[in-house]
Length: 398
Ligand SMILES: Nc1nc2c(c(=O)[nH]1)N[C@H]1C(S)=C(S)[C@@H](COP(=O)(O)OP(=O)(O)OC[C@H]3O[C@@H](n4cnc5c(N)ncnc54)[C@H](O)[C@@H]3O)O[C@H]1N2
Ligand code: MOO
Ligand SMILES: [Mg+2]
Image (tube, rainbow, N blue to C red):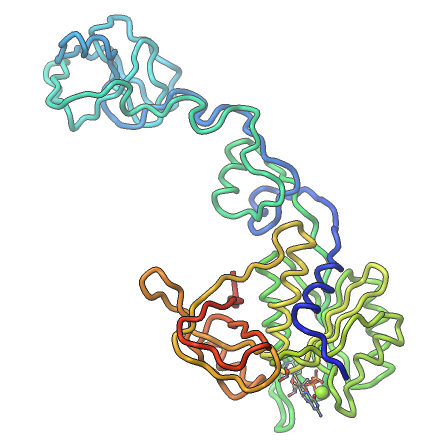
């Protein structure tokens, strides 16, 4: 059977991205959500001429005229209404964050003068306009400070707070169910019998999705065709996206592709020219998209990271491909006509991000993932990769 290439699979999956619309969430809960409407400055940034050092505010002209001693007229602290300097040859003590008093235009820090008997005596040079953060110099009121299609993080949340955006418009997330299959799997709370294992893959994938604030539901099905069909039928009515894990290969109990097709999910591809993750199946039924991932833990993780995350990012309106690049630290040979997702340790050598190969014991060895940080994508067109060669990296997290 003809294998679908990584490039072709990527194209098909991205073509099937879906816009889920917009919703409002409290700004405190908007981290790692995608902005849907611009965040506009309701005031200038900063909103007034802001004092940036604790000290005194004076008029430049008096300094330029040679004056070096200033009588303290009053004290302007942050949070007070604006003071006015009434005697142009005097000064006002000012604190960081205060409004610059009327009739003053620069600030001298405490380190640069001494105060004795209410007179500030300068002991350093002064520049025109120093130590003032001027009204509107960062952004003007009415300008969009953050554009739609921005993935929100700490600085963006601070902007939302500052402009009073109690609720922010963000892209809606798809509802996602992860369906596990396999008679050998038991719940995490259980003690497995010798022939059983705890279900773990799905928690890796669920955690990956949490980076985009998606909380999945879990469903487990036994290796039984009619139970599988029933579970798929239910899931198609309840969720936007189905992620299935396991049961997509050649085994006597690998029922997933058959059950999906019986439930009217159209197959877009099955089996990729890649390793791990070769038996990956992807399809769609109306507005349901279905990612049926191979059961081996490294395979399901590679597929979720390499295909589901770009699909989600495109659906949310941000650049799909979030890979970075790294240079191979050593020569590497992969003797197979498949794209290989090589597990690598990432480290810095000078300014260069380096990738050191660290293979484990195949796609069942998920303990090996602990010792490395990403998958280096080795294209199938080549077998020999040279030290220093720069290749795409899919980091495990963001
Ligand atoms: N004759 C062939 N056999 C296999 C082929 C093949 O081409 N021809 N492909 C191999 C490859 S590659 C992979 S990958 C696996 C894919 O298997 P399935 O998708 O059918 O997955 P299962 O058989 O259900 O399970 C495989 C493996 O993964 C473990 N698993 C499954 N789900 C979980 C889970 N939730 N938590 C932890 N571990 C899980 C399962 O116990 C199996 O050990 O097929 C190869 N075979
Ligand atoms: O492609 Mo499978 O993904 O080796 O384990
Ligand atoms: Mg199988």
